[in-house]
Image (tube, rainbow over all chains, first blue to last red):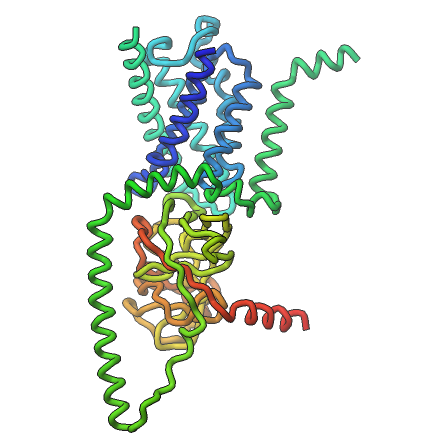
Length: 172
Length: 281
C-alpha cells in the first residue's frame, strides 16, 4: 500500500516538475527535457502492461491539459509503456533476472540502465515530435529536436534516479 | 465461447493498447468539442493553480526587466503626448476652433489588462495562458497585445483564466501590411525560430526595404489598424513569382511575456454579423 502511495506522490512530483520547470527549458531552441517519463521508466516490471498503459495514458493526458496539446503526450506515453519490456528484453537476452525489479541504477547496474533509459527516451521523443510535426514536417529540424531532447531527457532521468536513490539510502 | 474469452484475455494488452491509441487519435485529429473545452486546456482549475504559483515566482524574478521596459515605454509615450499636444495647440491657433474632431478608430476599443501565467515557445503549436476570464469580460477571438506589439488571439475562455493562440502558432494567421502602404498579406509562423515569422502573399510591386515596420491591417475585427507586429529583416520570391514572402522579426519577446492587454472591440459583433450576411448573400 505504501508503495502505491509512493507512486502517486511520484506522479504528482513529476507532473509538477515537468510543467513548472521542464516545459520552460528549451536549450538552444531545440532540446526540451521530458523528465516526467521518469515515472513510467521507474514503474516496477512486475506490474502488468495493461496497468502501465493506463497509468501512461493518464500521465500523458495530465501533461496534455497543461500544454494544450490534447492526445499528443498521451499517445507517446502509451507507446513508451508498450515498449518498456521489449526494450529490456533486447538488452538482456537471458532475461528473467530482472522480472521483479524496479528499474533503477542500483537494481540494473549502470550500463544496462543507461541503455534502457536512453532507448526509451529516444522512442518517446521520436513518437512525440513525429506526432507534433504531422502537420508541419521539416525533417532536418525534426531529427535535431529528437536527438537533442533525447539526450537532455536521458540526463534528467539519470539525475532524478540518483536523487531518489540517495534519498532512500539516507532513510535506511 | 471459452476459447474466445481465453483468446481475448491472452491478448488483452493489445486491445487495451488499441483502445488508448484510438482515444488519443480522436483527441488529436477529431474536430470535437473537447478540444475547445476548458477542461482539456491549461485554463482548467488545477493547471491554473500550478501556473499561478509558478508565475507568482517568475514574475518576481523578472521585475527588473519588466520595470525597465515599462520605463522606456513610458518615456516614449510621454514624448508622444507632448508632441501631440504641441500639434494640437498649433492647429488650434491656426484654425481658431476649440473642438477638433478626434480620431474615431480607437474609440471602439477597450482594454483589459491581464498577466501571462504560462507561455510556451518551444513547441510547434504554442499557447499563452492568462489570468483573466469570462468573469472579467474576456471572450474568444479577442486580440492580445503587449507593450511591444501583437501577441495572440484568445481561443478558450474559462471562468477566471483564458488560453490564447500565440502568434507562434501556425494555426494563427494575421492580416497585416507594411506601414505606409495599403497592400496587405498574412503573417504566419514557420515553426523554426520564435523571433521570426513569415509574411506571405505580399504583391511584388509593393515597395519596401528591410527595416520597414509591419503593422496590423485592421481588416479583421480582432485588431485595430496600426498595431506593431515587427520589422522586415529579409525577403524572397514565393514559388509563383508574383508574391514576396517577407521574413519579419517579431517585436514582442515571446520568451518573457509579462503583462498583456486584451483588446475588445465594441463593434465586433456588428462587423462579424455584416461579414457573415455578405458571405451568404
